[in-house]
Image: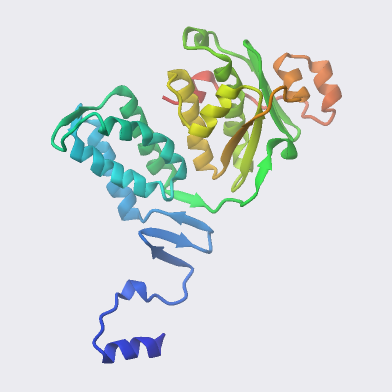
Amino acid sequence: METFLSVFQKMNIPLSAKKTVGPTKEIEYLGIILDTEKMEARLPEDKRLRISSIIDSFSHRLSCTKRDLLSLLGHLNFACRVIVPGRSFVSHLIALSTRAEKLHHHIHLNIECRADLAMWAKFLKNWNGISFFLDDDITSAADIELFTDATPSSFGGFYGNHWFQGNFAEEIYSEQMSMAFCELYPIVMSCVLWGKFWKRKRILFFCDNLSTVDIIRKGRSKVQSIMKLMRTLTFHSAYYSFVIHAQHIPGVKNSIADALSRYQMTRFRQLAPRADANPTPCVPHNQLLMT
């Protein structure tokens, strides 16, 4: 390197100092900090603060020009290189930008737009723009003894020897209730309760509800109550650095979680004799549905 720099100096060829950094455990590459000691990629602090400031300015506006919205999308798309789950929260903003023909035309920032921006603000504030390098292989939920199930009135989940079960709160029935919501609910509950054990993993859930699978794959839903669940799932998967995949398989055999969701405790103890004596407390309904 010293010989190389010396030759360029004698030939009066300019070089950027930050592009000739020697061996180091932390380096900025294409605007992203790569840290080989912590095995993480993150946004530089100045960029994180700048994007947070821009999002905050939008939160106080009722409308913006198409030019301003496209500028915001440029910042968010850059952040998605590290905050990969954030991709689920730019699609609506992109669709919104197509409603205006000219760059100077104004666009109304609707409730869904504000909810997505609030999600981004939460990412940048709490997650600090950090993304762990994930495992290349996808782990089947069954391989780590992770099972969830739901009925129209109750739900249950099992992981290792830990388990939870509960009844859907009465206020849920006043919202848009569906089996897609019911099946997604215990999946999100398991991510909140046990996600801290799944760092760097890609976990594949098998589900017999096609709508639930599509929602997890897209990361979005037009149903407000389901979108609240997806915000919670996305945030915790980012915070604990894991990814949830879903695959549709009709008639999935799910005996342990099925017994829990139906409160068939004798059957559950027969199927999982080493399970904890007491359940893991569920997160309250109003905390699980992120607004």
